[in-house]
Image (cartoon, rainbow, N blue to C red; front, side):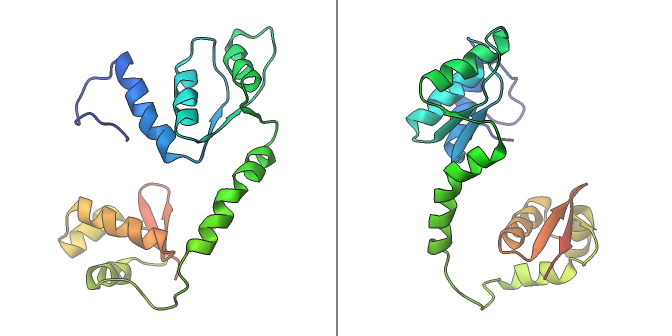
Length: 167
């Protein structure tokens, strides 16, 4: 969940633009699939443009009121999307740059806690509950370490909140 509001805050219509500003800031590109003329998706698309993000839209029939927002975005310069390839070609530049920035290292950068946790994750699905129970660590600490291990390519998340060791 992404929000500036504390847990338990009641959802209100005026909260969505603030949340969507965060969401658009986290992405390289924003795809609007369907939007009416007065859609909240259009607010998010404008925020993405202000944050120098790519905005993509899928065109729709001129007779469909739920396509008017996407058609307007395309008219205003959003990239028209007909296939996933359209998006991949446009965003490819970001991923090529990222590859060049990655440090080349073969040494493990895991600290002792991460290495200990990695040793407890099996090559078959292992639940977070199992790891919490066997390590005595909090769910938050385990989740944080699992994310780091996943980003470094040691683990893969599976359905049901489990993780599988892949190396």
